[in-house]
Length: 390
Image 1 (cartoon, helix red, strand yellow):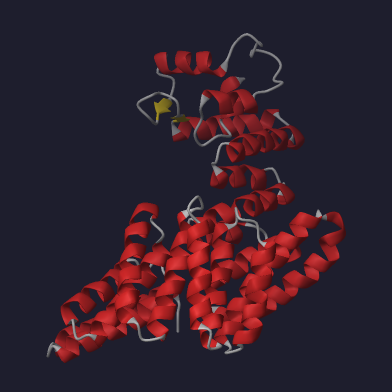
Image 2 (cartoon, helix red, strand yellow):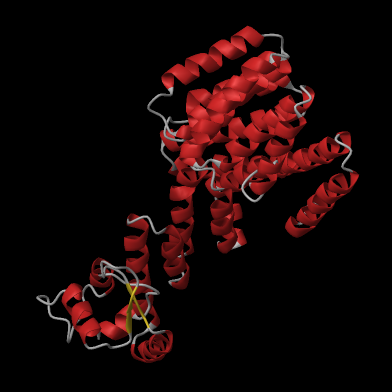
């Protein structure tokens, strides 16, 4: 009975097995824990493979597992199987194994539960700048489920922002606003305000790119009023847009003062907030021609992202340092920073990768290395084709 029921798991540990087998009648007595059974199975060498030295996690031999699953489906009805998968999903989600939890929720036919899993983890992934993981989770959900839920539409918009595909964001935000308006009566006031704040932050990005700095500033400030501190990534984007909008509207001192105040308040916040504030300061210094101040800030940023592994922020830092060193005719240093951006290409924004490789080609050209310049552009072309960017 234990083998059959736990065969739904790709990897198993005693607490997870206890959860899946909860309420099982027959051979699993209440006094027999899964840890005891797993120990017996391992001692008997019964197709059980340990996955760590501590013997906490195991898996079944794949052929043995396939045989067990086939037999399980002949013995249990669909409702009981779905119930087991839902229990597995709940345990895995509660212990931070979101992708595996999503597998079981979808296998159980629980699209609603799967959607909630992605909604619940999206800010954690964004705070770690883990765009690719969020994209993969969204892709695995049925498209009609994503389009029906405003929080998932906003999550999709954030992945586009991280890819710098800004032109694709407005229709998604309009759809999210319409869905939110329809769903709002069933939501708490804090949930509505939080999501409205995210939408404001994303609109601020779009409007800033469209050279509507004043409107961008209004949306960014509105976002900062609504977005909770725990949603560090979303708040940090709004902070940077607010600073840049201040700078564009002739308020550079206000921009730097605002970022300084944010930085002073952000000591206990995730590195994402700190990184975005430093990026904002660097941008303002570059736009006002204060390259030495920008260089100091960007080295602070590199030290920070080295600890937090914030890839998007790291690419921005290397890109700007490359640009600054190129302007100073420090071609060797510029080339190193542009090359560093390409090394981080899968986690950064394509716009920075593209600009860095074109600048690297120019750097080689200035140094009289025409062949290396051609190579840099060829590498960029292959990468653009690889990721489907035209």
